Length: 126
Image 1 (cartoon, one colour):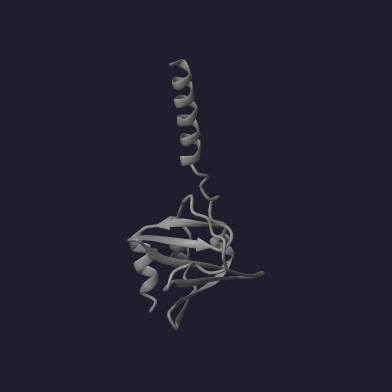
Image 2 (cartoon, rainbow, N blue to C red):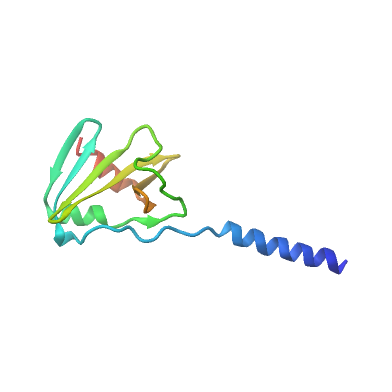
């Protein structure tokens, strides 16, 4: 009987460790003050934003998930491409909806959950 209890406890510990996946690191974007503009592309329409309040709203409010980003583009049919322009280059992230939830994906860095209001605001640039 002790053998079965020990085996059960070991299996429970292993399942607990496996179920607790590692969350993505916090999103890595330049500081708001370093961003000169943001290009938001929805379908074939691109809108440029340079308002610091709007930019600040876009880069805040994402929550890390345990999903991994392993490709250049999200694996979904439609997404919003967001290009941050700053003095030394650009940084691209993607926003999309999947199973009723909204995400921002930074290629090879992580996938982050966002609220529906932010996603809708990004779509308004259309």
